[in-house]
Image 1: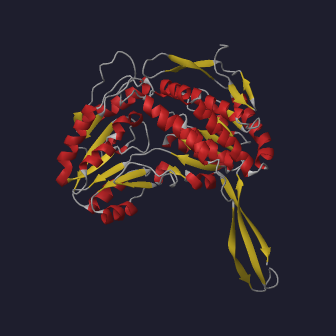
Image 2: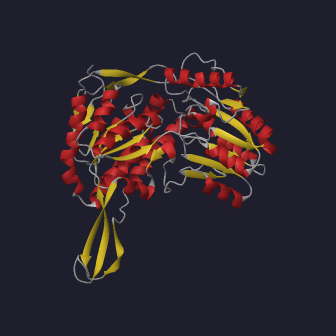
Image 3: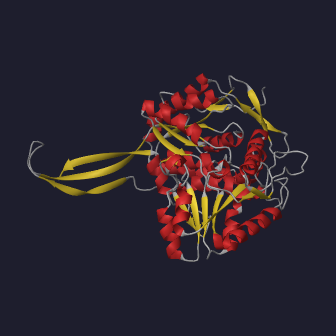
Length: 483
């Protein structure tokens, strides 16, 4: 196919060895475009190109690298509507989500890392007594952030703009070069990002993009001997396999994996705020987000009201064409994923949960839609309570007191972001500090975009966002001298 998307390798747009495959609009089931299927050799060629470009790029000044990122942000904003339309078509996101939370956030992330930050810190002098290492001396020291090298960025399908931008921008700012392997469902947006970086002045080989449906494409991007670090966003199961490969080769890792976010709602909570926050699971990316508060622990005194209000909230949401004004819930990414989410709802029924909202496929002629679904009367041992569903499905469980709430919240393999709703701020912060999660929202599902982001337990390894991402994509070198 000659009109399909080409790979971006070493500064050139090249035809894929594996031909092209169809990218499907989840809302219409029509063809959005044709994505390239890279061969293993082409992926390794991309990694080799990044290795060759690393030396010169890492020696550029932080100001030069920042200028490229700033120009990329400008170019993305200049084609904002076009890029958002593509993102909406590839992902099924609503127009508002595609514009603000996909393309808008991507541009903001490139702009954020166009801000040069210090990469050196003085360490207090140390007085050493005379001994086998030499005479008595005052030893000075400096800690210096250095780039890691070649970074493979394996990105998620739920946000083909913000997720890769959150990896590529800080990695480039630190002087690394990158090979981006986007999710197979919606890779076309990532190639538009590469075009913006190329036009912004990123030298050949600094940014490379390879895609494909075959697992061999991602495997090659991870196991290449030219790769020093892997940054991955996706499922815990895939993260474990990547971790095994990285462990054998001692490659650095940054892993943002699955989540089963718990929302603890105390008796004194503002239920309107709690329900609106938890309700984002039904609408935000149709629940296809690892930070979603999908597991609700409601204290006995408000349990019935929480269930009632969440059910009413879910029932009010408009499901349908994501390009239509007023649509809140679009489709999930594919027919296969719709089937998976529906199978979990059916499993919940069999396990004894009460389906109090949703549970049936919306009556739409086309598209991979799942109705916002609320499962009540859940118990801690149910699979729907324990496993990541990654769809617009919320499970509600009762609890009696603070101790039980914390114990239930931590009874999970995951630990990405949890939430606490209570009018007693002291209690909310006390509980937040006890939760084994990388982040805790107190009376909010909002984010501070400079706060560290990452997970405890099987939700990940490492932290990024803000200055923490610059640390994540760097090695720290110590330089010591006699004073």
